[in-house]
Image (cartoon, rainbow, N blue to C red; front, side, top):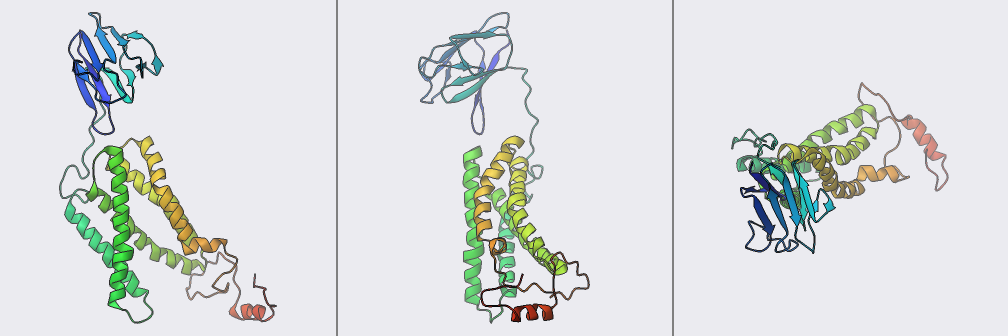
Length: 318
């Protein structure tokens, strides 16, 4: 008679009990062989009996929240085929054989090396400082008037540092709920890398807008960033760093990114302008690039001015 294994499935580390007796009692009472402290489990919930031939019989003892065998409620269940899925109140369990195959081992990010970018606090600190520097540099380059250091410091602390801290706190809390552990360093590194990628691609998008003399690249970038790149980055983090299942990670990445995407899209000026009838820039050729691949139909400045002079009050140039 081969000993069985009772697997108690939890959010993070599953519990395993070796069933090395012919008869095993499971329940909340302290005189059981396997004790489950959940309030939805009966004091004596079920009995697991294994005979000499290897057949397994499971007898239900609970009147409240009776045991479900493979999703069905029965007084007893007998089989020779394992594994068997059990539901005891809120507790999900499986009855396994010793020869049950286990999934392959997932390595720590960076193959276990403590100097890896996702596992070392030094990288997290350096990336946060780099994000603050990039944000300050962008603010400096966008300052048309005389730069005030107090305003620069306020922008870095309120706009950049506060946003990074808010995202790290929100994602760390979600990960705590998902896998029952805090992963502050990997989350911080991930948020900073996403921040830096955004500020790297933004100037390239601006160059495409200049090159094509059209706002279409800007619209595509802003919409694609929130609806494609952010969910993809979260999905990669959940599968490669947290090691969640692929199907579960896809749903979670969409669920996590959706609130941020909706808020960001609604507040983004470039996207909001899609729904406005008024355009702040005239639709005429204003590019000095030698490569002018116009997506939008343009007119000369002289034509635009002539059309504007002929307009009546309340009309606009189409």
